[in-house]
Image (cartoon, rainbow, N blue to C red; front, side, top):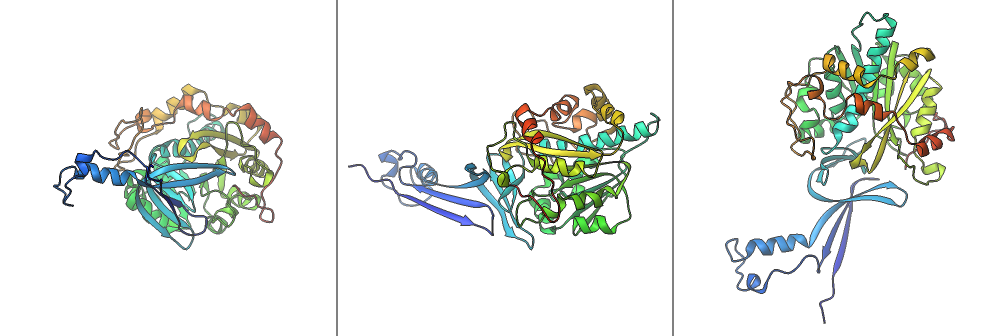
Amino acid sequence: MAKARAIALIALSVGPGALRFQCFVDGAGGSSPPFETLAGRDGSADAPGYEAIKDYQRAKAGMRYVEAVADGLNLEMDIYDILHSSTSDVQSIQVVDTFFGRTLVTDGKTQSSGHDEFVYHESLVHPAMFWSAQLAQLASAGEGAAAPRTVFIGGGGELATAREVLKHRTVERVVMVDLDDEVIEVSRKHLPEWGGDAVLNHPKVEYVVGDVRKYLADTREKFDVIIIDVSDPIEAGPAVALYTKEFYETASRRLTQNGVLVTQSGSASFVPFPQVDEESSCFAPIRNTLATVFDHAVPFSCPVASFGEDWGFVMAFNGDEADARSLRLVDETIDVMIEDRIAAVPKVPDHAYRSIGVKRILTGYERGANALKHYDGESHRGLFILSKPLRNVMKDDSRIMTDDSPLFMF
């Protein structure tokens, strides 16, 4: 009779709602080494077949990262290495090496990965920066006002958001406020490709450890662009108060006359998952909430494979309807602005892990389109084309997020 398969499952949870590691040990995993490999072993590394035996043993056990994307839907992948695991005063923090390369995880949710962090961060930053530039052009009757000059980043602990902002030659000052300095330190040490010391120590960057909402409420400084790059509004998470009407009202007062606010806005699946209201995406409510504060709240999205779904953003600004229509920038306009305004940030190392099609190594001295891996005029147009199913769901969703009535993602 064949030997019965023995399976042991070990689950390790680091902090509430944190990363779940699963270790599977399967007696039938993989094929056994040939008899001659096993015979005459003496336990030394020089013994015949040692490497085959070692590989066989390793094949029987593996650690996996399991992330809940939606109720009943999990994203699961092998973990090749655990580079960091800790719990700060704010959240649990892990850096793991997976199918998607090095991946930052907080409170059990993927924040970005080496495979496609540039897709997320370029999509978050550049449309708003160019939108600000175009608004300044309109306000100055086409005389070429050099904007944006000042940028506020709420969150952005990986440092990649600041990296993309610094690529704009018009920028003179970047204020970055993050509640959790441990995320900054972990990212600086383990994810230097996201920005690292080259960004953190950049002369244009002021980094503040503190509460984003309090900082904006207390400062008198105004910014051309405000970028909110914080974790999702999950229940008991550290960022819930940064998605409410009251917060957006505070942020709006800290914008210049032609200022632009953009925020990451959670899941924006091309065909939305069938979920009850309490577990639905916050994409529409964030758009709705911003629309109560600003004249225009424009939703857009991009696919982020390491998140397991498309991801949403909302850009908000003031102005009349004619100006808003003129801001639907055509491909050629974006590409000209990229060539005129964009340059890579020196001394940021390139990702060692790179998917097919984006293996070009950056030196840090590229200009124009060569300094970006994802964003250009054509991809800009695609960002603002939402699917019909998603538009229908958003049209039927009228919820507003307030301090007294917050909403939570799954």
